[in-house]
Length: 105
Image (cartoon, rainbow, N blue to C red; front, side, top):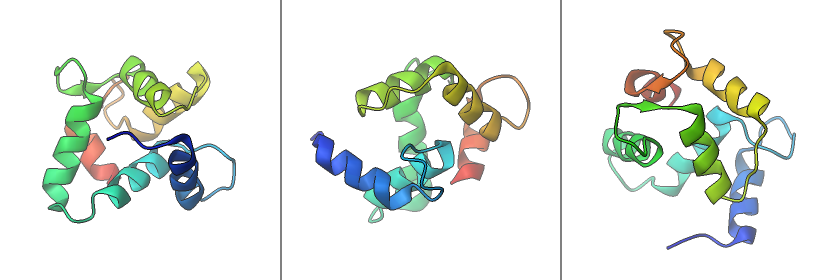
């Protein structure tokens, strides 16, 4: 089941802590976790990571982030995508692994 544009906008408004009108990666993760509160937290995080990790290589790349946001109707610039990666990427490899993703949640 896909959310409508109005539902997506409502979800964004709820987590847009800085009032920018867009959501950064931590805000997006909060939005995703709010949608699945009934699930076990670890299972929820694992499943969310798998959704982002389209190629199943164990990492979320800039391209995978761009794809996910585009599917939600959010066209982000390369700069915004890179900022999200930098916010999460502890080991500096330019990708988000599961441990980094879990830490954000």
